[in-house]
Length: 172
Image (cartoon, rainbow, N blue to C red; front, side, top):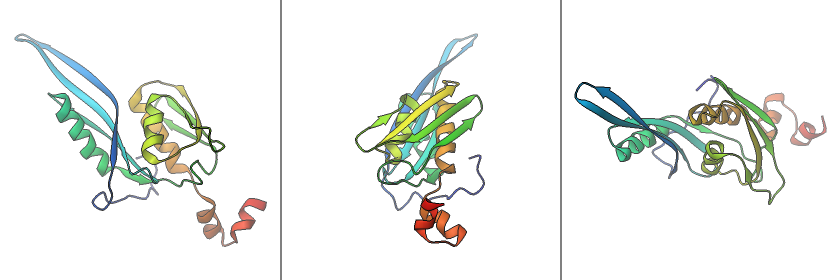
């Protein structure tokens, strides 16, 4: 995770749902023939503000997915969700991938591409507008989306940090 002030979550007390983002078949050609292995990127979340991603590599697809789920449960972060959407607009970056997230009105749904959609469904965001710019590599897009979600702050924590009342956060 790129951000140092990330809230880590213990995975033992939460029930998670996993989503497979992508599977890659890797071929290694040797003197004896071709050797296939698989890499899978998986996103897990409790659909209530906790999300994580992981990469698993193995000789079989099911083993790669299982390893990805285990890795994702080690990289969990807490994300603020406000009335089923995001608290504010945010930009996330990772390598060549750039993502832009924008809160949406109730009933809009998740307007996002494949890799970002998996992250939003796992974290529990119901209404969001998102745009991926730059790289379309699913690994980079997932990491950029998680980066943007980690940077989000809800009004309650901002009020606490500034030592002011909640209504003063919205009024300036």
